[in-house]
Image (tube, rainbow, N blue to C red; front, side, top):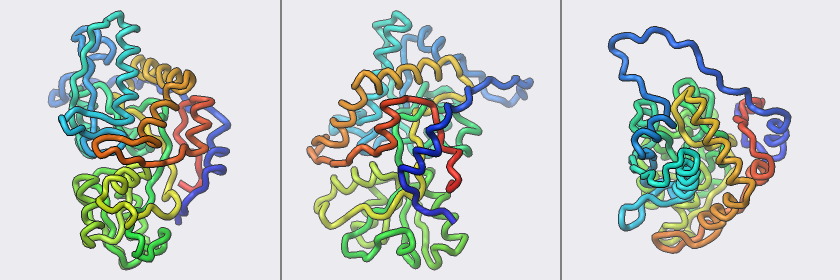
Length: 317
């Protein structure tokens, strides 16, 4: 049975070693039905003069749309810093950005099929997903928690028994909640899958669901945007604590090395801390609400010693 995990033990489990380097696998002869091979990312960017960035449209505060339909958010600003580094590295100050909107499901195919070079949002890196897609080093750490009405009586995972639980299809919360239901830990609970985060929150708001489960920052984002934020709160421990990373094409080692180097630079030179304060501790568009979300100890340590770690060593996973 999986239990919420505390930050100190989680950090200690990771602190010992760097993640193993990604090695390219031998390429088997492709069947005739296979899609056209996607060229190496840096080569494609150099040749076309365009960086294709996939982004979510409703993942406040990581990636969402401003009133003028322009992508904004913590993840967006972070990736624009990487674009600036690409301009210097490739000696292409004229590089342009083409935005590719995706949702929880289409983000993976957009990367694999070459429709986007990287996805800048709130994608969790876990072993199952790494079978098909690549990831940068972590640039955030978080995990699913519970958003509910203050008067619901729900305080932790066990209180979700017999409740209506809304999750966003394609997110990592789906298999976590499904496993708890199938194991009868959440006996009598019913899981409802919806397409987007605002839709999930509206179900709690309308009394159609008792709790909304997804990663913590997005819960704070939805709560902050509510008409009456004080009627809702985020409760319980992390159902699991996981790394959030930029989605890349699998085995494009050259591009991953470049992106990882830039992430480390942004963490060490103070840029990351400024972006965190801008998006998590200051008023953000469109309604100038403040999430007021403190930085976790795991994330603070990642800023001091940026390394590529996944947390798979954690025995509670």
